[in-house]
Image 1 (cartoon, rainbow, N blue to C red):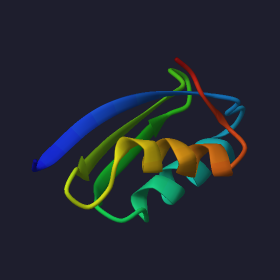
Image 2 (image 1 turned 120 degrees about the horizontal axis):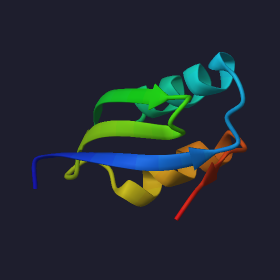
Image 3 (image 1 turned 90 degrees about the vertical axis):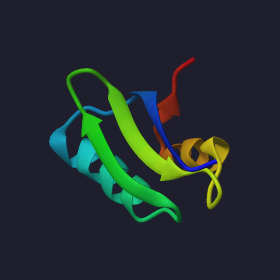
Image 4 (image 1 turned 60 degrees about the vertical axis):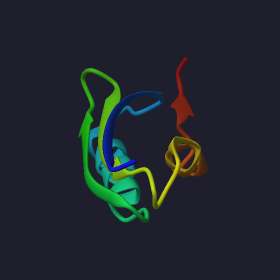
Length: 71
């Protein structure tokens, strides 16, 4: 499967601390090699190893912080 990059739309982030919390949570998730959060754009761009984690795990990690993944 290899590395995949996904852009996740996130709502509910209102400040830099919110964006840093999401970035930190995603960065420490198994299989994630990089995570960048754009507060202004409301997105998280994540590069991850699909053999080690699934997209649903990343979405759940964001939701655990109290933010919403937009469709």
